[in-house]
Length: 144
Image (cartoon, rainbow, N blue to C red; front, side):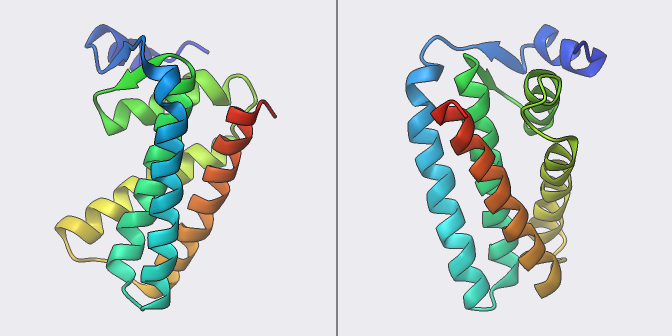
């Protein structure tokens, strides 16, 4: 899929080829799994701000795992989202709604971090979405 915005990310070197990427995919997946564990714990403790932040980073590191799997690295969270569309939605591996949830999670994380806006319902929903996103990334790495 040709996305002009993604092509711009490549041109501006916000998405670059990264020879060591495939070797780092499993390590990145472990980081995503640890973030998911932390977000669940924060949710149990009713720390909704950190559950929101950690759930986003679960998705971010899972997306980075997928990007590494393709042999690339990101230098922009926004371009990472575009890369998911270009590499995975276009191939039918990721559903559009999962990438949209990553995009929404980015906005929610920024709101929690910079504006102190978060709540229990959104945090719970985001943790659930991050679990699903991570499962898909794990499946891609296993070849499913």
